[in-house]
Length: 180
Image 1 (tube, rainbow, N blue to C red):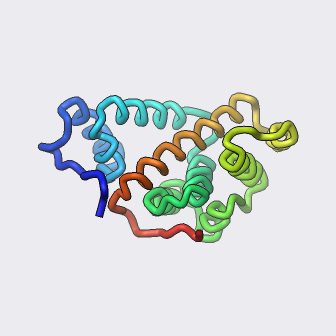
Image 2 (cartoon, rainbow, N blue to C red):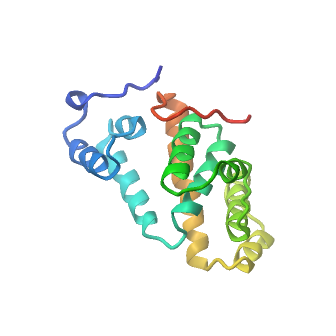
């Protein structure tokens, strides 16, 4: 059971309602994470704004989902593993072997594998990556703009991992547990 309530529509702050309605129009459902974050209209707006902006970046949906899975695994977030396994499979069209590799910080796609190695190093070093890490990601074909997008995807996913780990948000996707 969630340690922070999952508010119903009549319990949700009025400033969060239009934001949650937009999520509903986009996804066809309002995930529990959004409802929990909706306790704070400012937090929900900030999360949705950053998520929307990064969705317009050049990393792409598949690698974004891959990064989300790797970060969720490292942070032990069952909610995000469940959500991004579902999204990775159904929206990004990643197969089961790829999803498993992503959770281990790897990919069958060499460029995506480089992004995941870098993302996991960002998590593991709390952003204090080595010069060699930057050189490796650039050598894999990522621009400096894309490196920044990867760092922000790590941060965005860490944010949701931490919210869900604190709240113990009830999982409303097919459940996937961390390996840890």
